[in-house]
Image (cartoon, rainbow, N blue to C red; front, top):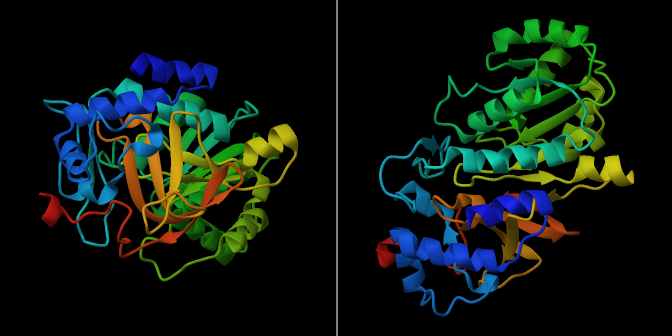
Length: 339
């Protein structure tokens, strides 16, 4: 199975039967997922198509060890926090396998023009924040795609990074959470500073406002990136991922601009990562909860239902909001009933 999944990175094609094969593997080897499927009346005999595969709520990662292997994991991630005050945990045994997903997706969406850029990461590196999946991703991609990289995770570093960016002679890639980038732009605004970053510079932001009272609309944030960093909206890519996923969705924006000179924005992915939009009745629809089907989640569970509301757009989707009180239906069964 791993060989088929890895081959898809080269061919950009993937037979949907592999998703059913992965379901059968995880049904056999993931006790929590098997119990969930059995409760819904689903098993290896009656799941024959990708649409038949049960979608397990990501909230299960808060209370159970969701894994398909025995023994100690080689890599563990803990979510930054949840509305219930309980963190999700993800465990991986094959590090090189999930690295392939992260690196290939990042290069495809962030570096489609093979631009050589210096990295400025507004987040802690993995050697400081060793349980963060985002920190792991940022450290991995910066190590593989940039010769010069800087990690900025304290506001006292802003003065120094401002001087570095003012002296930059090549395009840069700025990565960080929405909050961290907003804070840096606020710093520039207070200093009455505008950075004229080189043409080809780009931004990758991710995450929401995490309880902050601020809730800046996307259009305003794009304008701030342009006004204070000289980075146009065609070069701003939002990433959608989570602790429970090995892979990530990205805005198609930069690829569309580079290859087709079009301006459009929606979340997309490589073939090994799919999405479905599920309504309150548990049926696929144009608007509803976002479900993810990630083959690189082989060590945990590949078929998940998130608490994020989304809607289909072109060949992808866009996120509308986080649903605080998860919808009934959509296979969201209470753990107290299930276990």
